[in-house]
Image 1 (cartoon, rainbow, N blue to C red):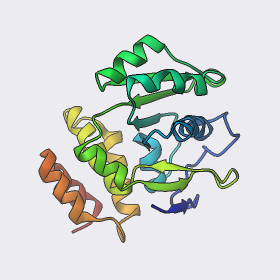
Image 2: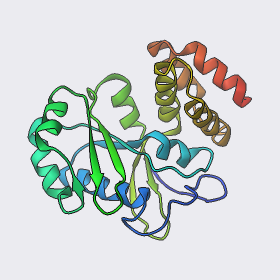
Image 3: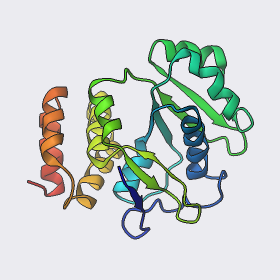
Length: 212
């Protein structure tokens, strides 16, 4: 992994670099810091990841994937308790069934969605390919973010789950492909698209983005 300092003109999160915990970037840093203190494997994903490597736009969506176990819930909530609300019983149940849960940042009411998938297959690959990224140059704190290849594959999965009706998901995919055209690994994306039944969607996205 490497540290990528973001440029507002190309890879920056426009409108998301204010105070340390008064915006989505600050909220994401708080959650990432808790994961790292507990030694929990995690990734920032969703719109913040696609905007990091793609078309700059504002977003209030904060999405993580994390390799949590039920016994990790209490220590995690202790770390987050001063700043976040979360239902311990619900979070424990969702962690046990490898589902998802939400946290709410008290000061901003920003919602954080945490997905707890089995840490195998595509989810393990995405973590192995993670990028260490400084989201806010003023702060300098780096966190683990889903790679361009990983976020394209994940966004295509979500696009398929919406029945191909989410223009935002499709726009995010094209943004990452266009902004990362010179370095993105098309071969590995094709491998995972075959594994996940996304070949037709990936071909269409590559065509729309002007990539071979």
